[in-house]
Length: 181
Image (cartoon, rainbow, N blue to C red; front, side):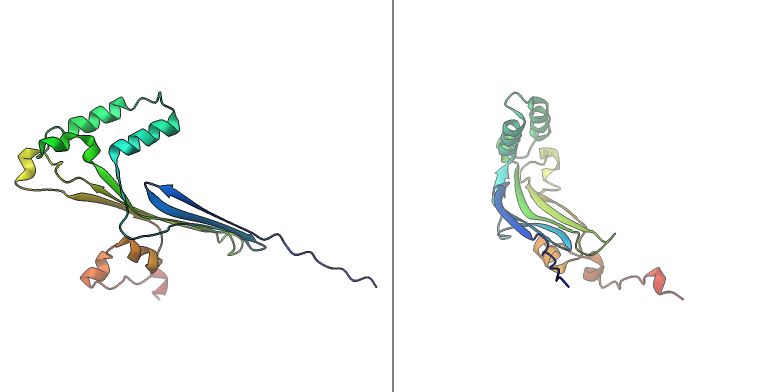
């Protein structure tokens, strides 16, 4: 009787380091017999470098072509900033961004119908001096943080500095309806 051998499945791994918003990012892809896993994470989650709004507009022009018309966007931003507390702050180049977290994970190795897709994005928009002078004696806004996520991984949430309001306020988690009898 002839012995048959089964060939091993194709396994592959790929990694790439790149820069986004002046932040170093790593992307990893692995494939084995169970499926594919893909992960994107910042290399260093310390103090992220800042990127000016003008640099972002210039990068958009480079990606989309030099003839891309961004004048309407620039005019709207300049108009919104013209009544700023600091007369020099009306320059839109003073608006800066920091990419604090970029996380993306896809896992198809969990079996049929159990694909995992998670993401987290956190950016700070530094707006110091951009509040209109009429409001500056009442309020100043130094930065605006925008975070979007769909993960419960503590390590990611901790690196994003996300405050869970229920935990902070000492509110117990609501019981799952399926636990009720």
